[in-house]
Every structure is written in C-alpha cells, then in structure tokens.
Length: 348
Ligand code: FA5
Image 1 (tube, rainbow, N blue to C red):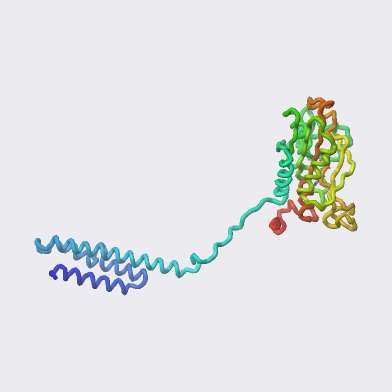
Image 2 (cartoon, protein in one colour; image 1 turned 90 degrees about the vertical axis):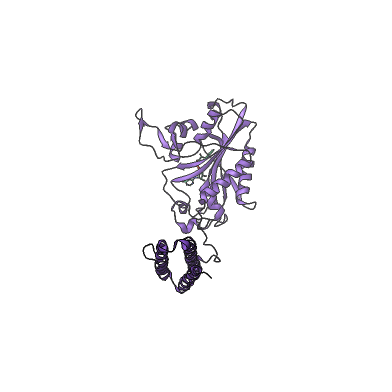
C-alpha cells in the first residue's frame, strides 16, 4: 500500500468510525462540521494543503481525497435518511396499517331526495321536466288560471308580494303554487303535452305540523286528444304506489280549484294513526294526509292557450313534496325540514 493510500485509508476509517458514533442530528451536524466544514473541516484542510504536496503524487492524492469526500458526504446522507425513516415509523399517527379516517360526506336534503324520486316516477311515465320562475307575475299566478282579482279563491293562497308597483298596482309575487306553469308550458308548445314542473312556492301561512310558508310542489300537466279522468287517476295511483308501496291506502275527495273541472284532492292514510284518527296532531284526526290537488284542465284554459277545447282535453295535478316526504318516513311535523337541525337531517 502506498503512503497516499495508507493516509486516505486512515482518514476514511477514522471519519466513518466517528460517524457511526454520531447519534442524533446534532451529533451528525457536528461530525459534518469537523470533517467537511467549508472553513476548517479536516478533509477540507487536507484538500487545501494539496498544493504543498510533491508534484509527482499531487494528482493521485487529490483524486483519492476527492473520492473520500464524496464517500463521506454520501455516508452522512444515508445516515440522515435512515434516521428520518426510523422517526417516521416510530410516529403512531403515520402508521400506514391503521384504517383510514372516514370523510364525513354530505348528502341530499330529504325533500330533495323525495323530489328526485317523484321526478323519476313521473319521468318513467313519459313526463318531461319544465321549469318556471319563482318570482311570478300575478296574471300568471292568478288571472291566467281563472282566479280574477275579486275571486274568493285568492284567499286560499295568502300571497307574499314583491314591493314594486307597476302602473300603480302590485303585480309581482312569489308564486303561491306551480300551476302558472300550466299556462307557460302551453304558450310554448303544441299538444300533445306531458310535463312536470318542480319548484318552490311561498305562502303567507300560519305554520303547523303540515303547513310551512315555503313549500315544494310538482305540477303535472297532460293535454292530448282523448285524455280522461281515468288517465289522471291511473297516473296518480301509479305514482303513489311507486312512492309509498302497494299496501298504502289512497283516497280521492272532490275539491274545488278554479282551473280544473272537476277537481279532486288525493290523500294517503296517516302513517301515525293509519286512518284510525284519534287524537292525531299530524292528520288532525281525519285519518288522511292530503298530498295533492288535481283535476281535468278547465276548457277555458285550454282555449286561452290557443288549443281547440273540442279536440283536446287534459289533466293537471300539484303534489306537495314535503307531505310526500313526511308520509314516506313517518315525519310527524313538516317544520323539521327547514330548521337545519343536523340531528334530524343526518337520519336520511
Ligand atoms: C294547489 O296549489 C293547486 N295549484 C294544486 C293543483 C294543481 C290543483 C293542478 C289542480 C290542478 P293546494 O293549495 O291544495 O293546491 O296545494 C297542493 C298541495 O301542496 C297540497 O296537497 C299539499 O300537499 C301542498 N301544500 C299546500 N299548502 C302547503 C303548505 N302550506 N305547506 C306544505 N305543503 C302544502
């Protein structure tokens, strides 16, 4: 072994031995300063002294010292890497074998879920979805559906008006029902018509277990040659069976809406008292919960739309979606839906 090799070997052994003893990052840093420090590291000084070496051995010595420097740097980095890996696996929070933490996922509001299911039920029967404005002209909300200014039926929907006068009159309101869309649809299309119009409606209501001031409806409208009351009943039975199951009892009562003739209301047996009706605050002891109004479209409305009422007939309905959701899940008070109580909402 040449003297150069012997010297470099000795340096290597000493440095590497010292590195094995350097426990912890502070010790490793001290080792780095001692051997590789830029100003007075032992190897750095040795390299700097190369210029004083005899010219014939300078190149070989320089090569060996530079190789030693690379070895020491690599060894230091390797020690640091394995120290970091050991620290990571010692940290329990990063134990990769632990099961993942579940993300808390959001979900659709129960009224939205019910709305989607209702839309799907009607879509399967060939109804297309149309949308109309929530802020509506009074002429669409009332006049066009045969509810003139002085008609007592206006009392049925105590209205939230927009505070803007047009020609000295209030003409803009929050729609009280989705029925104005019967007119909007017929204005835009020729028969045959088969649409549903989902959306929010607003009423100046004293709220109770089955009444909210904001409610969601789906309007349905079918107009064609030969549409009959039996088509209306068949459609609504199919809808109710799909949403509530075969065993649920359904009842039709006669009712009055100015835009249909004849008019009906459809109700489902109360989920609390099952149409037993004793002290039931949900159905007010009637045994039934009304979910929709419906009927055969009044011929005057067919004519106003520019359709020939001697050729075309139609049916329409307006379903209350919160009521459907209540009946599906046995929710005894409609006001739960919009109180934003997560204990309630997380159940769906
Ligand atoms: C109407 O709104 C008519 N436009 C329905 C209609 C359409 C009849 C087409 C004929 C032809 P009514 O006010 O009854 O009717 O409301 C319809 C449904 O909306 C009710 O059966 C009920 O399910 C729901 N609903 C009405 N008022 C409220 C309320 N304040 N809170 C929650 N749901 C309500």
